[in-house]
Amino acid sequence: MNELSIKSSSFSSNSQGLSEFFDIKKLRRIDELSKLSLLCAAEIFKKENIDFAKEKDDIGLIIATGRGPIKQTCNFMDSIIDVGEILSSPLSFSASVHNSIGLTITSLLNLRGPCLTISQGATSFASALITAQSWLLSKRAKSVLVGAVDEVFTVTSKAFEEQTFKKNCAAFFLLTFAPSSDRQEKLALQHDKIDNLNPSLEAFDFAYKLKALLEPQDIKKIIVDFIKTYLAANKIKVMRIFESTQSIEELLKDISEADRVHIFEGLENMFGAKTKLSSTKLSADCFRAFAENNSITFLTSGSSGKKKTCTHISSMIKEEVIGVSKLFADIKRIVSVAPTHHSYGFIFGLQMPKYLNVPVESYPPLPNFKWNEILRQGDLLIAFPLFLDYLRKLDFKFEKGISILTSTAPCPDMLIDDMIKRGAKSIVEVYGSSESGAIAFRKKSGEPFSLFPFWKAEYENGNIEKISRRKTSLEIDFPDIMQNAGAGKFYIKGRKDGAVQVAGINVYPSKVENILKQLEYVKDVSVRLREDRLKAFVVLKSGIKKEDVEKEIYKHLNATLCTPEIPKNITFGDAVPVNQYGKKTDW
Image 1: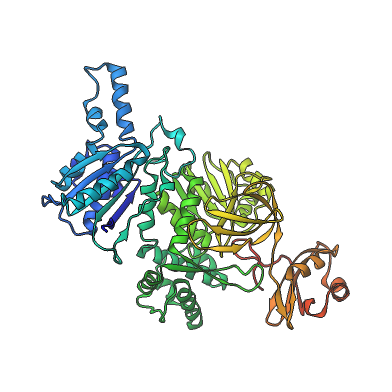
Image 2: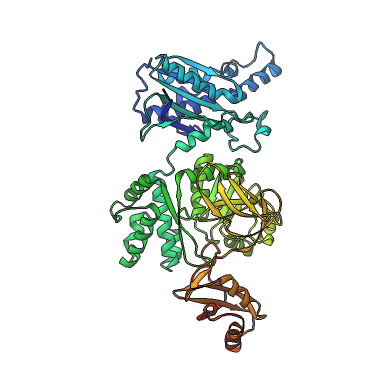
C-alpha cells in the first residue's frame, strides 16, 4: 500500500526572510499571501538542496486554500466601487485570482510539473492530499509540493475570534511515496481538525508539530538563563550577572570549580546528557543530547518539599503550546521576565512566540529597568506575582494596550485588580505546575479557573481527581484542593501537599503549618522536610519578639502534634524565603 510521506515541511506567518532567497526587486508587486507561500516553498527547496534556477518537471505543485486571497479580492471590489469598472485596479485583479499563488511559485522556483489550486473550504487540504497521491500513483510527478494557504482580513476577522491564527499563514509539505525514516513522517488526516472558520488549521498545526522544538540558538539562550539564575541564587554578583549580555564562555570564566560542577550537573539533567558535558562545546553537547532524547527536564521549585525532576517530551510541549496560544492570538510582541530554563518561561517566553511568529524580548525580573520605555502597545508581559507587586510598589503605570500573563504562584485578586487600574489592557492568570505544564486559566479576579481544552478531567464526588492530556500520554492526579464551579471550572482552595516520611510515619507539612498559623502572634510560616525531621520557618507579627514566644510555640506543638510531626528546628525571620518567582523555597 502506498502511503504519503513528508520529506520536508515549512510553516510561516510572516515573510521577513524572503529577501534571503530572492532579489527584492522581483518581490515588489507580489501580495503578502503569495510571499508567505513562496518563502515556505523556498525553505523546503533549500533544506532538500533543490536548485532554484534549474527547471524541474518532476515536482508537482498543489495550492490548497479555503478562501483564497481575500484581501486582494476585496481591494479589487473596492476599486470598482470607488472608480468604476474601467479604472479598477489591474494589480488587485491579478492577485485576486486563486491560482496567482501557484503562478508566483512556479515562476520564481522554475517548476514545470503539473500545477493546481484547490479551493473547497474546509476540505481543501484533504482534497490536495488525495490529488497528490493520485499524481504520485500515476507517475505524473516524483514528488508533490502541497501548500495550505489562508489569510485573515477585515471581512473575516470576526469569525476567527477563538482561533489561534489571526494572521496570514502558509504551511507547505514536500510529499513522496518513500518509506518513513528519521527524516520522513507519514501523513495521516485528523478529521477533528477540519474547521470551517479556519479551513487550513489542520495543515498549520501539522506543520508546526513537524518543526524542531529547539534550534541551536534556543539551547544557548536556555544555558545562559540557567547559569545566570544559578549564580544569582548563590548571591554571586547578582546585579552585574542579570544586567550583563555575556556569552556562555564569559559567564563561566571566573566562577569556582564547585559552581562549575553544579551548573554542568544541572544542564546534564535538563537535556538528558549521557556523558559529561564539555566546557569547550557546551551548547553543542546540550543540543545533541536534546536531539537524542527529544525531551527536556525541568526542576520543580520545591515549594512543598524536596525538589523533583519533571521530564516533558516534545509532543507534550507542542500540544500545550498550541492550546495556550489561543488566548494570545492578537499580541504583537512578547516581553518576558521568566527565564527559559524554567517550565513557565520555556513555554510562554520561548515556544509560544515561535508558534505565534511574534518577536520576543527577554529581561531580568528587576524593577529598576525603564519599563515605561520597554513596554509598548500590543505587548504581552510574561511575569509572575512577585514582579507585578514590585511594579505596584513603584507606582508603575502601563501604557495603553499592554496585556499581562502571570503564573508560577497564586496571584491575589487585589493585585489583578490593581494591574487593571494601572492601565493594563487585560491580565490572564495561568494555573499549572512543573509536572503538568499549564492546566487552567482565568481572565478576571474572583472568577473560577477554566481547564484548558487539551485536558480532560475525571471527577469523583463532584471534584476533579485526575486530569489527562487529550492527545498525548500525560496523566496526573489533580495537584491541589479544588472546589467545583461547573463543567471544567473550579476554584483553588489550598495545596494538596503530599505526606513525607518521618521515622517511618506519614506526616503532612501543611498540617503543621496550619497548627502554627493558629497562634495569634504568627504572621506566616513554612514547613518542610530536612533530612529525617521537619523544620519550620516562622514570621512573627510586628512588635512580637522571638524570646517572648519561642517556648510557648514549642509547648503548643507538643500539645497538638505527635513527636514525628514536631519540627526539630524553628528559624525566625522577617519573611518566609521565596525564590525569584515568589514561590516558597528552602532556607
